[in-house]
Amino acid sequence: MTYLRDALTDRVGEFIQLRRDIHRHPELAFQEHRTSDLVAAKLESWGYEVNRGLGRTGLVGTLKRGQGKRRLGLRADMDALPIQEASGVEWASTHKGLMHACGHDGHTAMLLAAAKVIAQEATFDGTLNLIFQPAEEGGGGAVRMMEDGLFTQHPCDAIFAMHNMPGVPQGHLVFREGASMASSDYATIRIHGTGGHGAMPHRAADPVVAASSIVMALQTVVSRNVDPLHTAVVTVGALQAGQANNVIPATATLELSVRALDPQVRRLLEQRIKALVTAQAESYGVRAEIEWRQGYCVLINGPAETDFARQVGLKLVGAERVTLQGPALTGSEDFAFMLEKVPGSYLLIGNGDEDATAGACMVHNPGYDFNDRNIAVGASYWVALVEEFLSP
Ligand SMILES: [Zn+2]
Ligand SMILES: [Zn+2]
Image (cartoon, rainbow, N blue to C red; front, side, top):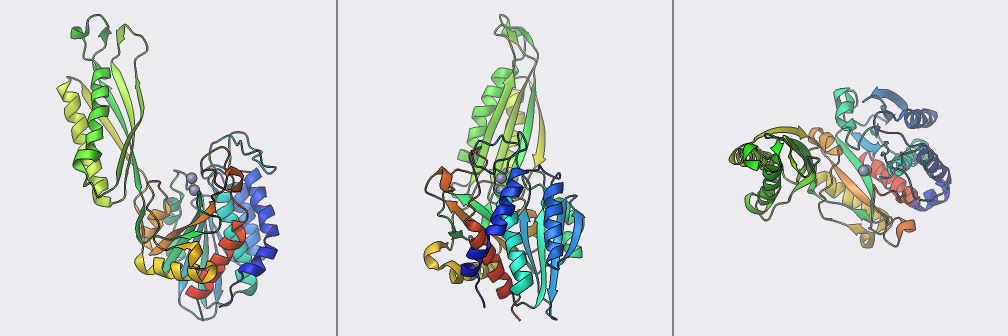
């Protein structure tokens, strides 16, 4: 197997420029038209067959070599966030209120850098599908691509994806088998009471008191219902009611974010929250209306694929730069839906841990920037994984 890390390091200049160009032109979920055009043009120029319009702005570049039956999928996300950039970098966003604050510009550039090397130099036998996905940030682009026939048109035996991680040394690779990222569900709870004069509470049914009690009662779901050895998060991120000190409002609204690392715990949280909110409201003589919205599912990395991905990482960067079983995260990722259909693994690449300018600033922060030194490492990793998975 030819590992191209050193060779790539000298040749990634083009892709650092490309990453910065994408960074200057961030696009929100399903609006990644410029990025998608750019990716498609590059892939076509290197000989990939390009299939566009999967999940609106998503696309797949396919390259076949030899008679091999194995089929591999690598996925990068392309969307930006509605954040006003404050990184101060020369290549900062030129689109007001939008920025690549999660490094998806870097993920796209790493996979493109790999795509060029693979097309021009890699030895492999089989089918390679490079999946460029829209709308990872809450838009569910992965599901939309699958609804449009991603895996029926481009069947894969295994799929892999990589995300940068600030706070982890630059280029360090972190793997994890099993449940690795949380499910995320959302609830809007409207408490319907009876409004009235603040001086005569006995003539009203106060939704503020009921809502306050519900906030406190919800704390017992994690502390009293979930097995202490399991992970769960119930956050009340918004509580809105009333406007004046002498008026009891008629309604109150709560917004919840609910996360779990186990599908069973996820179901338990929904069941307990609904039961508790309904009973609490009733006990205060008000009525609760609960709107439950399912977000992303738990991301579960396959054991065999994760072990394969680890071995590629160990050979590429050495044991001192690999974490074999990293911690699970309570963030969410819609690659989880792809992993429900096709086995695979999702890994992290350290964005840097020294200071904010060296990649340590957290994703979704206005000061964040993708660490360009990772383009060589990430692209080399993809090339190595392709050569290993589709070895002749
Ligand atoms: Zn993000
Ligand atoms: Zn992200």
